[in-house]
Length: 386
Ligand SMILES: [Zn+2]
Image (cartoon, rainbow, N blue to C red; front, side, top):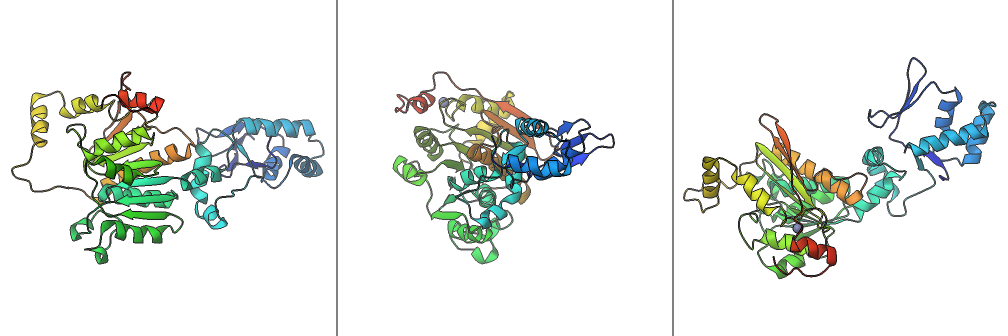
């Protein structure tokens, strides 16, 4: 039972011409009450999180003497069962008043989507508890880190050995002209500290190699890992990405990969690495087959593109819009994984979106029943084969 019932602050109330009342504006969660008595609106006004039930009964009956205690209790119970109420007596012991105000609008967003009675700060506290490692601070990593800092993920470890170049500034959102020549991770930290001082930013100025000891050190005590560089591990053995995935599965740390090019955005799957949802090794064959395609010319072309280029002219053809879209979707999934207010939509699934014609599709991937990595995640033991 709620100590001090509070109508979820994400819900406005509207009255239709025929007297019906709608609680909530989002169509799929609005709750309709058919022509309630006049006391109903006043009851909703009293559900402000400052009153206990006896006080609500007393205050409402002062204005509406005919409203019975049984009707008031039943109505509050129905609103609670419809996930419209939270407990105003609960207060965060983790977030400061400044943070509660800072994150107010997104906490409304979390509460709007959750199917329970948790106050928004519960989800925000979960974000603050996150320790995120972002591998790669180029276009994808900078947009992603900006999103994560705005959202209030508690600690970001930025990993990149590169320096800011003038040609980065058209799209790598954290860098300014005066950062040219500065280590990317240091420039990024400066900007992120200014964006949200409540987020701890740790830097590692290094390139991650195919070295398990280095990867283990970089992942450290992470709760979430982002791979924000082009992943070759579906096609080449023993890459740094493959080792990152293997280490993360050993520790059951979720990984989100972020990639795509200016015309074709691809986000997912989100790898929970829980031994149930497919891991990176489960989907390798399917990803390879999908990328190679079904026509001979496409397959030959794509296989050729994996070979060393005899005439290599560019290594990144990107602009800000596609990067911000990709990073926004990935951060949206990360927020669901970390805060748990709703289910992530890209576990075992990949969203493909054309930014040219705006066609979209979802590819689904299955777990392999005999995957040794998933078996390890389930049992906590080392895999017999990789
Ligand atoms: Zn697996």
